[in-house]
Image 1 (cartoon, rainbow, N blue to C red):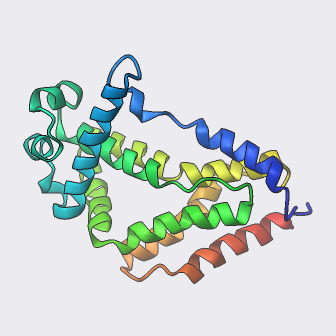
Image 2 (cartoon, rainbow, N blue to C red):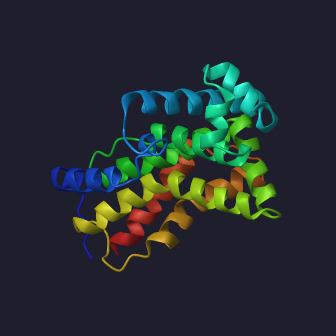
Image 3 (cartoon, rainbow, N blue to C red):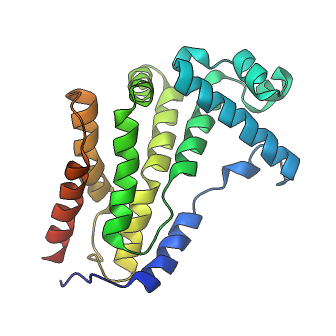
Length: 217
């Protein structure tokens, strides 16, 4: 198969559709997308994410989030009855907000999404949070669900870029999306979490370029 280097216009449309197909978390706090409800959710999740960044796992409680956001604890407990659900939504919202806007250029979109992982692995707080979720998931079904949900959101940009690449003929139709995501993201996670070695821009470029060269054959 011959890899097409440029079909940006067509792929931008397809990639944007895949990207916008992600669930909209802003409408899950209530039955309607009332702007006040959306704003309340944004304030709560931003406060939880900031506390997580500043103080780690233990810093996020319903009380601390209530104080930081100005939203009453009764409201928090009504919609997030436990810490895991609150943390999960906060992490997913933060990741979703940071997902790169698709451009339709396959290489650029893959690199942009891998850069998000690279930045997360370079942050001691975020790296610690990843390890905490992985550790707790060994003993708790609630954390296993959290791990699956966060992983799905975190890799959604890579998956969307790959789907768009398949749709516009840049990638083989029979490409295994899950395996490809693992091949692109897995080495970064192993190097950053297991070896505690820096994940460099050069590494992300090599992962993407090796994949694209292989897909072109």
